[in-house]
Image 1 (cartoon, rainbow, N blue to C red):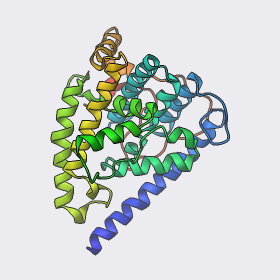
Image 2 (image 1 turned 120 degrees about the vertical axis):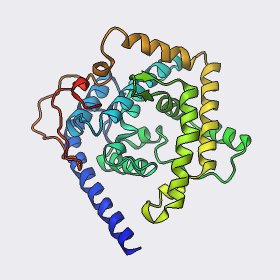
Image 3 (image 1 turned 120 degrees about the horizontal axis):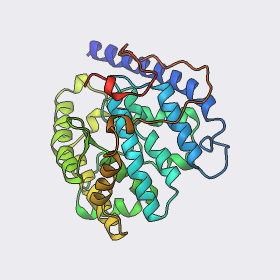
Amino acid sequence: MNEHITTTTQERLKERELIEGAVAMARPLLQNSHLLEGNSGTIDPGDVNIVKDILQRVFPVDVSNYRTHAHLQLAARFGQIFAERVGLNSAEIQVLMLGHDVGRFITHRWLRNELVAAHALNALGVRKDLLKKAPINDSRPPEDVSDAAVKAYFDNMGTEQRIVTIADICGKRNFDDWGIRTFDEVMQYHRRQRAGEGVVAMQNTTASFPSERRIRNEMIEFTAILYDLIRQWLSDEGVDVEEVRRMIIEEESSTSVRTVILDTPSPTTSTATPLAHASGEHKYDVVNINELDM
């Protein structure tokens, strides 16, 4: 037990160090955005470019994180299209999608990465009204997993929360061929793989964080039903998730998908240096996925 406490304490200290470094680098780059508390104004495409720039500066693409970069970029594109079709501010949704999984640059522990993301975004001073639209760290094990309970949860979600949730699920790639998984394929993975992760976490409680031990099969099923409700809601709004997936595939067909998904605006002038990764892997200054060891 003492060894477990020592290990988790060391991990927490390392995570805090990485968060502090990321916040210190990102905050100056956000000063001219509409994303910080006290900065009024409508979020616009310029803010999207600022966030993309920050992600590349703070977490340069390397062999340990290219999948996270790929997911954020794809989820942002899904979110942009969904938002446009239901009449939301698409730039705001893109910002939410680009930032929703930043915790994975620091830890891949499921659920804990959400805690890390929430902590980092709060420490950065991101607007509270914006964070409320992203259901980060809202994965508490439900006591009631009935259809009625899931429907009640769905009814209480804001439109932005629904879009962020479904865009996150749709933005999953198959890295064997860099294709985009169908909604049904993602649901099969969610029910099978994540349920398995939950069982492992529960059986190995001395090697996991408390947040991981919140994983239950009931939670997996609750969220799976919720995802389907959101997909049906989008369909009722005239948005076909599969049609959007095919549209994005068509967009990517004219060039190398490995480059497109990580394409970013030219960095602004900055003296910031890349955040050191715990992995110690080489970091690429130029976004070129073809160089990465698959």
